[in-house]
Image (cartoon, rainbow, N blue to C red; front, side):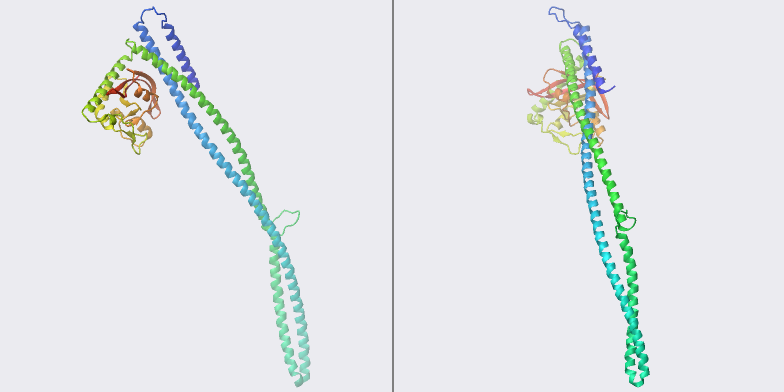
Length: 457
């Protein structure tokens, strides 16, 4: 059954019970007093109203906690989506910058290709000049050879000329050899430059199939895919963000409805408590009367113990009413100390502990000041904390401030007694429905707080 269905069921049951109770309450001023059986019946019905109201209130509280966690999770999700969208925008900017860089590199590569073409032209010119030099060297060798032959014919007169002719012939040979070496080197260089030129050359109306432009094309294609994926992701994130914001609005509306339901359940709970209070205060015995008497008597003993301590000078009035609570470091749930904590530890167990054995339905008996501070709990709930939040919540309940609805009402009530119905968190996801009778603790004519006696239905 969902929380709303449960609430409707419980509220319907409460209305039916109230109607039954109203039907049997006489309104004429001259009717005889209510019988004990009728009082008992009304008390039972009021208790059932309180039980249902407390259960409904607990169910609403559970649902509110879930909704709050979901709202917080949605808020975190929206923040993460915004961060993702910012990252995707950055990716989009980076991809555009990458494409611009590739385009610039392409342009530079084209310029390099043009420069390479110019180098090829120059190399061709050098190669042509080297060929001319080689041809001249060949012709020079022939001329030198002919001159050498003529010099030998001339005999002694041509000897000097022959030496010159031989030297020219040797020089021409070396020039020819150098020219051939230059031409061979230029040929190798030309082949390498041609290969490089093919790698960087772009041909119109043709897709690159090799070299740097193929790499550029692959980079552009990869960057384009990244940009497309980022754009799709931005669209998806935007749609999800719209949905989460809509869901957040709906959950906020649900929270408002839960607040209204909580107010309704509180009114039913207060009505039931008021009925029980009126019936118990009428002087007629009800099922709650023994607990009321017991807590009033025990509260009187607490008042007397505190007043005796004041009379003996063991504590001052200022220290007894100290509410500047000092947190105990490293505790969770948070524990606190007050200037009357040590005296409470000394005096209260002798009054509180026997109440646990007085009736098997009693769950706890504790004194609380007007702010919900419980210095000394029952011994079974006064274990040192272990660092396990669930266990510590259930078993380390001393030095704690219970400023919830029930705790504050019990601590601040100044009527002879107060009856409340509520659901208690036992830790670890366990809850029990119980009643609580409380009575005020007066010290030196001042209201110090109240004694709380909780018992099961």
